[in-house]
Length: 302
Image (cartoon, rainbow, N blue to C red):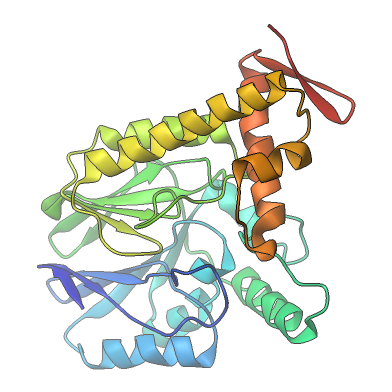
């Protein structure tokens, strides 16, 4: 699907449950050159869909695979796409240690059901595929990548993960946000060392400074009122923060105690993610001196 003069989305059926919105893969193209933004899953069906799309556009040579972060729904297809196209894979330097360790405790935004062996095996396969990715370029915020006559700027946007990046296509004012901003709903933020709520809010403020005409997220549909979307995400987090402070005042002193008050109806598959997100808010408040941790409980400092 053509989204702008120089951007296509490359569809594929979801290979693994990642919530209601399957991961997006985009291609930026100009002058016979192309850059993929994320790679999607590494299963044969997903890869073939992307290779078929590229075969239909033989005039475009893919030179770059630009990963937004290490999570396997965005990265596990990178190595095979690299082998098929000869493209160079780029990832922020702070993501490599998580990408390389398929057995780490780093959250992947969805939980493993203990009683579903097949799902667990597929999860591990995707993590191992991601870990095998050859990294040709370790990028940092402010770096630029050329695609034909186009320029893509790397924006370091820690929060969802500490090395998450967004990409800004200046020529079309297109902002590729990975999981920093979704097309619908909000993304999970874990507490340090895997994520950071305070940094996440700073990242959203940083993105507001860009003159973006369209937001192209890692999941969901394109967003055309970009400033409004980013402000909605900021407002949502600040409202949740106030809700948590009120729950502390009411004597609910653990994420588990707060869970049902914050999330009325919650898919059991994402309960651990929701608990981490509450803790991420508490860690932000702790860094600001507004709450403190006492054994397993959290307390107001005021």
